[in-house]
Length: 211
Image 1 (cartoon, rainbow, N blue to C red):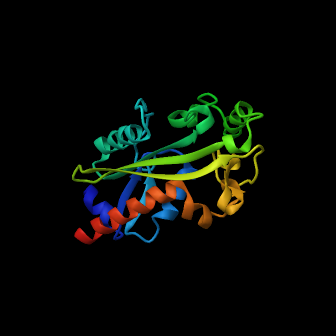
Image 2 (cartoon, rainbow, N blue to C red):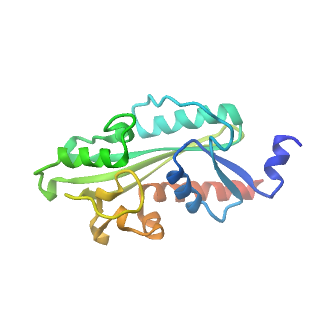
Image 3 (cartoon, rainbow, N blue to C red):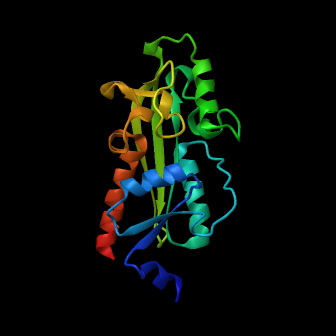
């Protein structure tokens, strides 16, 4: 059975997400549920190795990751690059959000470092936003890049146990809680990744009608 037949055997095509982060993969799968696509990770697709993200923007890094996986698989590939921009820190940690406290740092190490850097900074100067750029490469090689954002500010102390990354310290004033205190449905309805993925969902919906 050829690869194309394998992909179509259960009536679904595959979207390969260029990530090894299971939390991120689950979030993406939830937001794309109901589409005729099976969402799998690059590891599930047999793509190993690390991808060097040496772009200068979220969009460039997303494309670098998507192209690396697409060059191996030739299937529908999606990659996101996301991070936290803190205005008081001139946009840091930005594209370095994942490595902000070192390559092997845990989530708590990252947000604790951020809290230390903002120690004593008043609430009105702690404005921040999550940014997510998603690169989608279709089997015919077309490349599409979208962006989603969510505005908030950095809390003085972490709160909540859900989510991952900087979620415990990213406070959304309109809802009176951090990302880590939100249920999946609420978070996905307002998050940077949710906003970007709804744009991707619209694109994939149109693609599924064409084929």
